[in-house]
Length: 189
Image (cartoon, rainbow, N blue to C red; front, side):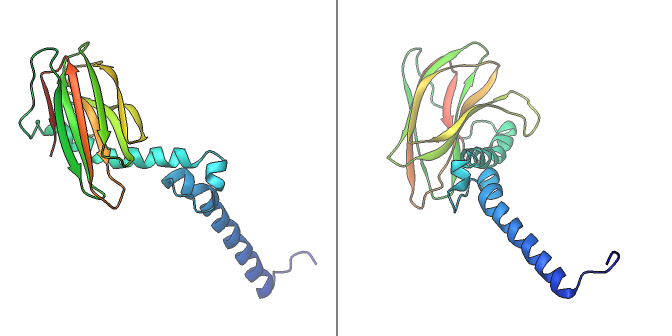
């Protein structure tokens, strides 16, 4: 009959069905897309897991990039004669993140290479303009790798470099080297 209220059993059944559907959606789409966690493999099949991993890399990199704006190069920067390579080595504890930055002017270029002692870790190549507002930075490349190499041309005056996050359970050592148009190349605290 129209206007009758559902019984307690009908309400319980509808609630359980809604809860089950929400749990399936959470596990198969939300966790892979937002956090890069894919317990079922469905998120990977749908292409959602890489999106979530990139979001996590952005999230992990953002606080360090923000604090980097106001903090000058903390360690003594390495400066080389033009054309001479500079090398910086850092070790990341589990769940630790750090940066190595080059101070560059717009249009200057550098060749670079970095590698870990074997483990793949999250990285982001990014830059901050001098005197930029806190949290303001430009991201050039993100991913997970055991090493990368190439060349980079600064689009603006500022600091440009990498943020790495060690999501493994063991320490990871990173060796980064660069040659070219920078006035300093150093690890940040």
